[in-house]
Length: 407
Image 1 (cartoon, one colour):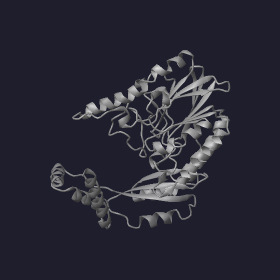
Image 2: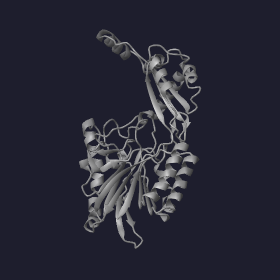
Image 3: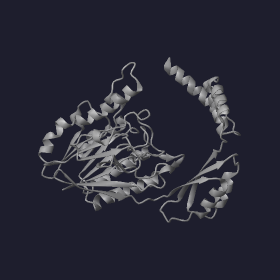
Image 4: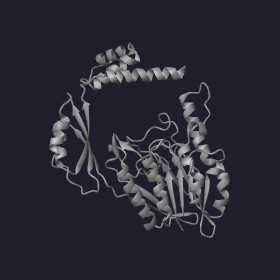
């Protein structure tokens, strides 16, 4: 029997606007070390987006390496880590030969040889008891060559086929393991059709391109451990193909989500059980939306949740006119609520519905404008009382850089 714990989308180094998430991540990593021991986990799989950026801070790197060191002292004998779209292949792969000594297997990007993604997990008697096809985030160049003049539909079909083909090429390598009743797991960091996303995910392929369905993964995989979508979910109601989700809410759209890790238990090639284990939160995020009266009422009703870290609250005020002293008003309301640390305030302008003639006139007017004028109209609409000169200057610099790149 062998136990595998599946997690993903740590995004170490992530900020919420200018606020650090280091304490929340450390709370999760400490809990995960304890869980590896408590659940007697043999193999840990991290399905991409270890870091939030390709150039992680020294603090994020320290958290990563400290966790791997602590995990090595548990019963977990092997760790498999793949790169996600946020990760730098070079950053992840740089220490891979050293980490391999400690049975930490890293596949930051797609290697030249397909077989280099296949990791065999052995027991103390050096007998193979699990195989992992460690597929990282597949970049467009990894699965598709561009063809001049191809339509969007043709591009979409070729990209989906390329992703599917990448997984199907493993079948010729894993047949021998299947014959010997050794379970085979695949990993991935991608979108699948029908998946539920949140505000914090960035598109990794243009539009809906690259979304594949569950039946496009080979049936030879006993479990598919996916990353990229931050909500835990099955793919096409297939129990053995699933996202673990992120360990902490990475945006306020995930405020109500239950965060989990997934533990899969195997007996020979049979998947005996899949269990979701809830990650205890250490900070509560809230989202309050409505007019000023609603926002004030809901904010006053929030009570102390007795968590380790104080609460962060996003305010989405729906208003016809900017409330200039909103920050002061709301801070006054929470002056005695010391368990609220931070308010993230957005004011969303309510615009009256336009008739067809007004919409047509606006479209015709936009067609007559240059990009700078369109940008100016947009920011003046969003920030009617603000000085937009600095934003216009930044826009001009961006346009200049774009044209320099084309040249």
